[in-house]
Image (cartoon, rainbow, N blue to C red; front, side, top):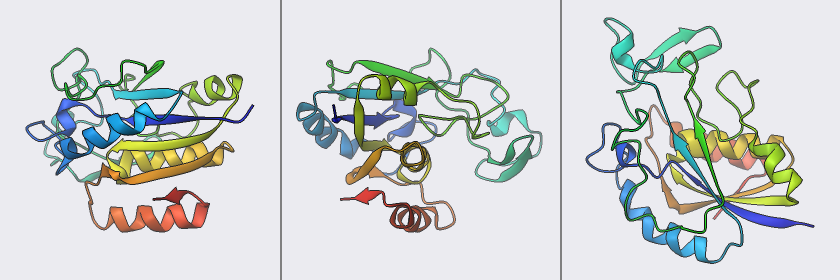
Length: 199
């Protein structure tokens, strides 16, 4: 069986206008995502889900500003404004997201000491979320990705899916980028190199 699934990444209040880590135009993609979901038999969601003292928060690093890089035991880590704290309004899915048929929510970033951009692996690139096994056991071999943000959680999810052997495409109009230091262009280059479709 070669089924396909729509993987919707982090359409949460904190990543939409008014949120603590708002992506410009983040809420504009929601109607398209809702429409895409109607055309897929399988729909899955990811949800950023951080403890209040998460190590990726700038507030946990004295004298460090958000959007700068620090060295963590697993490598370079961008530090962020506090966002998507477990149980908070900011961590909730945006109320315009209308995908009641979603069959799975993968929560990521809940371990205090390590961040998690990808739906498949934490930022050490070793610790799996279990999503790869879930999809393979259900015969899903093709993934379409949408959501926030194009150059971070969507990018790393797409790259890891491709690495695990899935056929992957990203719907560019159903994403928005943070674009730190040219990260959006770097994402497009990476997708082209890895055979990840962008349409």
